[in-house]
Image (cartoon, rainbow, N blue to C red; front, side, top):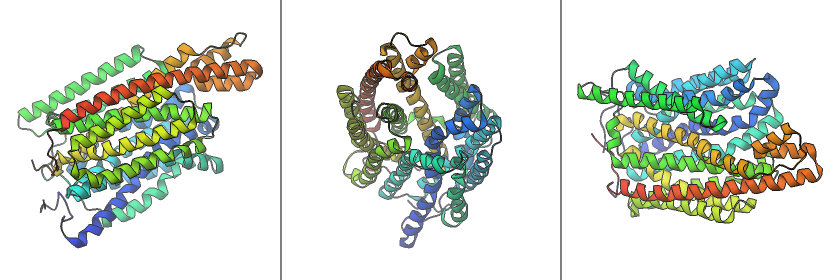
Length: 521
């Protein structure tokens, strides 16, 4: 298809001299992708240094971490719709400018409260970046094979950034102040601000939906409630606060959906076309991404603890051991983008998910007894994720018209963010519960030390370093065994979950044509 509307896509598909421009534009779009993915992991390594420098309260320290994802998840869908309206490149440039400026302010925050505010503002501008990049890719790359490769490159940027986060963070914190992890955004985004107006074409919905403040308020409140409740659960368990905020968030989401349907019924264009979810291909692709992200984050959660706490590796070296799995994700995504044309999309996605299920089943059988097992399992997981997510992202984008790419991309990004939170809550919570049920604290320990050792594996390692001697050996032996029991159970759960999702995704996606073409409606 060649769309002649200049507001929808600016690069003709078949012109030979435009091919280089398309790939150059993709290169520019990878800058914010790389930044956001690095930013997702690098802060965790800076928290101890921040705590030492700013002396935050326990609540402030939690909000320093949580403010960004809370605001980001609440604004992804509204920002996707706004990008469709005002132009995705324009939104990307606004988001990049704001993100760079606020990052510089965050680096020199004089107090914990100011850093919390800066993190919340980063969430606002961060929500402008990711839906814009993916929706621009949807409009630039119309050819199916090119689009799959472009999406594979886009996803590879996420994987590469996630792997680089611990390494970059470890290096910066070893040589510079904690603020350096925020200043990292500036040299990455300045080239984007210079090159994007030249190399990235503008695209927008020629018939955008009107601004609906009530819809924006409903989706923001709903996603904030759900994300806050899930995050709170990962810290304190399912208490009254978590349950009430999650239920309240779900109620606001229902009200949001009802409002969109009512506007459509009255011939008023909704902010988000919720009818997209009636498309089983779209819904199947989104669900596959959500579940994949859930178990992927769950694996990283316990793999990082094993490498750092059980094996005693520094964060930077632990991150380096996970690079082979990241490379597997990148290579698998790029390869499947070219060979997928020979298979039905449902077969490819379900195969990738089944590969993940098999990897978790092996880990559940073997246990996390060695670093080699962790590395090999992550390579298999990375391969499965690269295969499944490359094709599911392509299916998600191809099943909607280009003018709705921003809203669809925002839904996709929301599924990723929700999956990441669910991974920490479900897999992390399961791991913690099994650890606490199985760890045996040696008799004679101080009550406070015993409580710390019983709470987490990290607490046990810290206590063991203080007490020393035979008590330390007994505690570490019990703690490591209890942690491995948690890994076995959570891996078995993940294997079953991925196996079921492989079947469901096949059933939902099998109606997709063998060669997905951009939707026109």
